[in-house]
Each structure stands twice: as C-alpha cells, then as structure tokens.
Image (tube, rainbow, N blue to C red; front, side):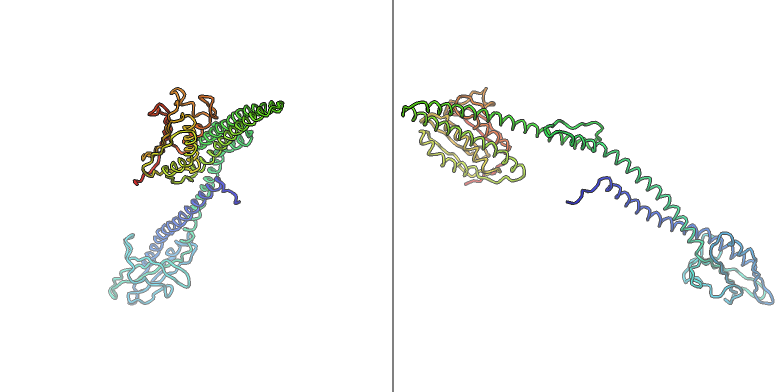
Length: 464
C-alpha cells in the first residue's frame, strides 16, 4: 500500500511552492523596477554629457567645429561599467566629430518630457552591443549658418543591467531569508500542533483491548476536539454494544441451562424406571423440551441476524418491499397453524404499501407478531393482520392483553409476563423496529385483546 502523505510535509511543500512563486514574481518585478530606476538615473547623466558636448560647438571659417571638453565623458569614469560613444552631426547631417554610425532615433520616437531639452531617449544596438542613446538637438544661429545640430551620446547596457540585477539579487536574498524563516516557523508550529495527536496515539496504543474509557482531552486544540469527541462517542457505543452482547450471552446461557438441566433430570429419572408408560411419557416430555429449546435457539439466532441486517440497512442495503404482499404470504403460511388451534386469521390489506427495509428482518417481525398473537388468543377467537396505507402494520388478537404498566418491559430480552414463551418474541420485534427506524406501540384491542402497531418512517402507497 502507498505510504500516507505527511500533513507536515504537505503544508511545508504548499507553502514553499507559494513562496517560490512569490519570489519569482518579486524578482521579476524588482528587475524591471531596477531597470527603470537605472534608466532614469543614467539617462540624466547621458543628457548632461550631451549638453556639455553641445556647449563646445562653435563656428570657424564658415564651418561648424567642436571642442569636446574632457568633463563631458569624465562623468562616466567612476560609475559606469560599460563603454561611452558620442557623435556630433552638423546642420546638414554630416559627421563633425565622434563615432560613425551611431543608431539614429527610430521613427515616431517621442521627445522626452522629463527634461527641458529637445532630447529623445531610445534603445539600439552598436557594434554588437545593446546601447542606450540620447539624441539632443542644439540650435545653431550664426551669420553664416542657421539650423539644428544633433548630438548623440550612447552607453552600453552593462551598468544598467548590473544595477537591475543587483536590486533583483538583493530582493531575492531578502525574500529567501524571509521564506526560510517562515518555513522554519511553520515547521515548529505544525510540530507543536501535532504533538497532542502523538500523545493521543500513544494513549490509544498503550491501552488494553478491553479499556474503552474516553480519551484524554488535555491540551487538545479546539480544531481537534470534535474528532476526539467523535472517537469517544464511538467508543461509548462500542462499549454499550459489548455490554449488551455480554449480558445477552449470560442471559442466553441461563435460559438454556435451566431447560437443559430439567431435560437431563427427566431423562435420568426415566432411565431408572421399567414402566413402558412412564418411559413413553418421559420421551414425550423430552420431545416437548427439545421443541422449546429449538424454538429458543432459533430466536437467539434471529437476534444475531438482526445485527447483520441492521448494519446492511445502515450501509444503504435496504430494499423496497410491499408490506401487503409480505403480510399476505405470511398469513397464508400461518393459516394452517391458526386453523389447527381453532383461531380465525384475517388479513386487511386494501392496496400495496411499499417501505424500505431488509426482507428477512421484516418477515421475522411479522412472524413473531403473528406467532405471539396466535399463542395468546383463545380457541374460537380471532387474529387480524392489517396493512394501512400510511405505512402502518397492525396485529390484533383477542387474548388477555398486556397491562399498561408492563408494556414497556415486554420489549426487554427474556422478560415474561407469564410463564409462557421464551421472552424473546417482542424483544426481537423491538430490535427489528429500531433497525428500520420504525416506531412500535401497544394498545388495547377492540375485543379486549392486544393490538400491536408498527409505523414505518418512509412509505409509498399505490391504489389498486
């Protein structure tokens, strides 16, 4: 099986990915901002150099000449890592001084508004290097000439790129230190937050298999408290289930031990007798005892099946069942038994009524209700099985009924209001009703007997 992902590493990985994206975005932003700052700073120096050069223009013998001051290019001597080029063109566009073929301003290049000068800044390429160029127009007004001279000063991008790169490196370094600190803080915080879970894990691992006490809530964070409470609730339900099973096993052992001991005593007593009639009576009593034990064992198995059926219903395994059809089939199956006891068995089901449930459990419910009604109805009496359109099942007999003060206790296992029966019939019915989320209630019958009413929460009736 694949190894489960670590919550700690997942948080750190997500945070590290986010920090890397932020660092990349911040680095690019810092680079472009640094480049813009470098352009602003170095453009001012370029323009100052162009102005200084333009101040050296003069007219001599009807021609425009230039005296380039050393200070014009000396500005770049200490803060520039690149090379400086300049070019001066006369009013007729001819080269007066400087380097040839410096790139001219592309068509449409706007004049700068940042400085009070007829200057344009643009990027170009010269001798295989990227350069930044300023083109300054200088008015020439002499007796022998009148027009505009152009001074171009270019600088390679090395200084600007280095400045932008330094700003980007400094930004990334600061963000890296901040990110590393954040990751370390997250690691410490998550480790501290997971420490209560580790204590809970050790507490659970060190417990005995029969220790179902609630988990300790000491130092449990608010976000983890619902999980711990849910585990405690599950453990409590599990403890109650174990207690019920233990009690059931003890009760079942007690209920089985008494008739088995009586049967064994009867057999041992019969073995001492040589009277055939007495032996026959003992065999008949033993057969009846075995029948009662078989019935008790079947009901104990029914209780065990209810647990599986309830789990199937809880896991979505319920089916759509027609109560009317189910009542009709069971009524037909138990009609011979009712006839043999001299009891009239009637069915009242006018239309199909569909409920969601487990077929075996619902058959067990109807069987126990009818068996209980037939067992307590007198000879010549009647038992009525009704299926009402609102999803209600009723079984009414004409027996002695059950006193109101005992109607809550009859659903307890092995409770007997009289000496008849095993005390499991109505207990099985109650368990099946709980599995189907159906309500069960006991009422007085129309003829003095008992009427058992079972109402299902979800039903669908169809007219015939």
